[in-house]
Image (cartoon, rainbow, N blue to C red; front, side, top):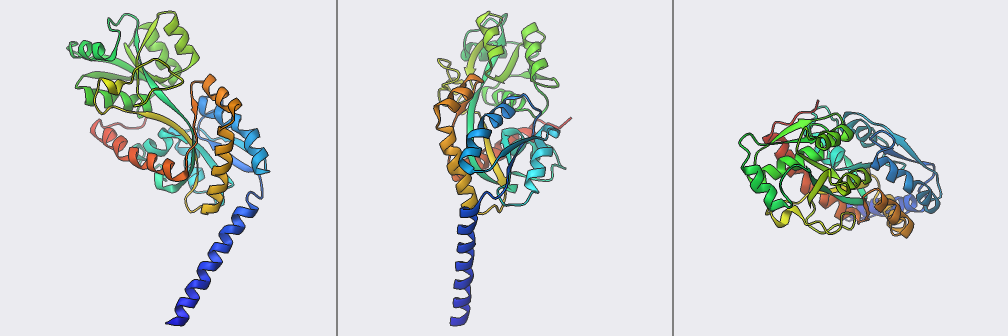
Length: 322
């Protein structure tokens, strides 16, 4: 028996030594940061903002690799199946990580296929209405929506998008009826509410929307996050009126599951340092996002808490990928 315990102790020492070696030598080659979206979007822009400062801290080039398709599932699946050595990462958000696996039976991965490294940014969705809608706040919007026999029409960037599911969550929590009109992307969905083809839209904040609001073509009624947002200041939370409503858009970096904890810790330390830089904070804020790091454990908790909620909304509304 004593011999077995000695053997187990030796194995544990060997594993600890291997983990320490991983941390000391990592990274040994360029790091590939997969963005599961086309170039030019906010996820891609933030990834490229992180490239140079991360490379300086880690001592290896950081290569941004766009792998769009299937609502982010193609790039995410590729990373989930990559070697778990920390050299292949995915820059993800709620959609590919928490939502896509519940909608796509052939996704080939789920949230447990990844080891969270750190949050990178957060942002609220904003509840937007066409200027003709005679309301000025969320309470008035709820009353107005309840008075519409056929329900209000709202646009989204597509079935299963965060804007779509967040709107369905609002209908459930507020007891109102709204009709989904999906578009192929954020731009046409924005144009639909601007022209009045639909009356409601959920979106992250951006300069284009801000300009339309300033020109009084659109109104901002509330933000989806439970807490006030520095990127959408002086706008109340929807949850102040609709009890229990809260949605945070998050962006973060994940590695394949089973990536050694010392490697995760090394990556996390670098991200925390970069995201604390005032220049990075300013760049993120300019595109409507708040730079925000986290521990791997906190990031894992955020993902774990939202997966069942989105799965429930998807199931109850029979949401299917196009």
